[in-house]
Length: 186
Picture (cartoon, rainbow, N blue to C red):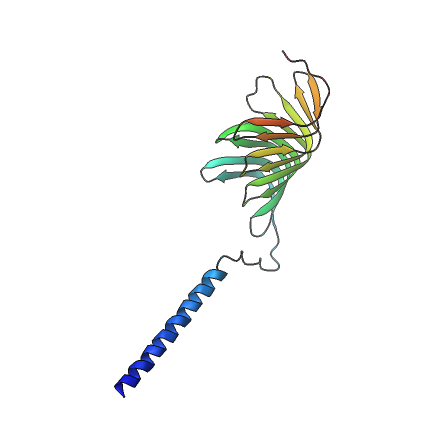
């Protein structure tokens, strides 16, 4: 009789262990399956006149002064209107100044898209070069600023039309598309 009880206890222990192991495996597989949905009825956050700053770990990525901002209830995305005195940082230091009619933000990836009338100028540039376009895309992970629509480069009273511009902040390279216009180089 004692031997029979031990066998049942062993079977119950093995079955309990198998069930616990199965539960742990299922919970691990289901963990991190996205964020829970936003509760219904939560309105987006509306802000008027302010400053938004985004850091990548401890290094600044970009910052904007704005007239009006609208953030999603979860705070992971948003749109900003009337951007002025925006700054894109390179290696933690101010590199480009940007102003735009409208900017869409992804606060999780630190990416943004500026649309409408967009003006960009390099901070501290002795030649005062500036860019005007209607669409700019910043990809933070790659540290790339793309202007896929026609852009106008202004330098020393001269203007050059460029079909596309891509600036890689990591390797400090600039790729230009088709050019239209003439510029005097000294």
